[in-house]
Length: 128
Image (cartoon, rainbow, N blue to C red; front, side, top):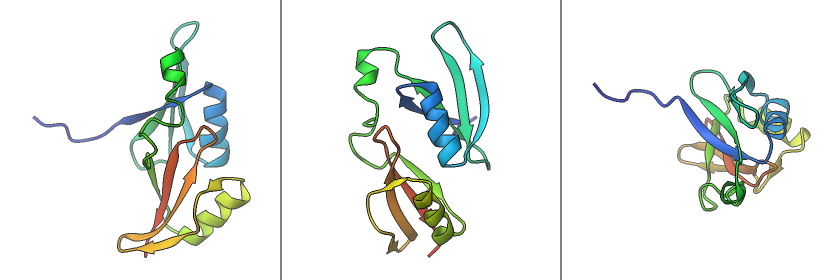
C-alpha cells in the first residue's frame, strides 16, 4: 500500500472568517466544510475543485501567529492553475489581489506571483 493522494494543505490564518473572505470571496474557491470542533477551533476547508483542498487553520498561539504569511520562509507556497491565464489574471487584479510581478512566460507556462492578505506567496500558472 502506498500514499496515493494529497488531501489537504494547511494555511495558518489570523482568523477563520478572514481566511474564508479571501480564499472564497476573492479567489473564488468553494467553502467545503466549516464545522465547529470546540469553543476555539473550527475545521474550515476550501477547495478550487478537482480534488484536494486547503485547511484554513487559525493561529492558536504566539508561535503560530509568527508563522502567518511565512510558512515557507518566503518561498512560493501554493500553485493555482488557470485554464485561461489572461482572463483569470485580469479577474484577480480587478478583485484587488496583490501581484508581485507582471505575468511572465516560463517553459512550463505563464506564471505570475501574488500574495494573500496574510503574506503567503502563491503562483497563478496557466498554459504557455
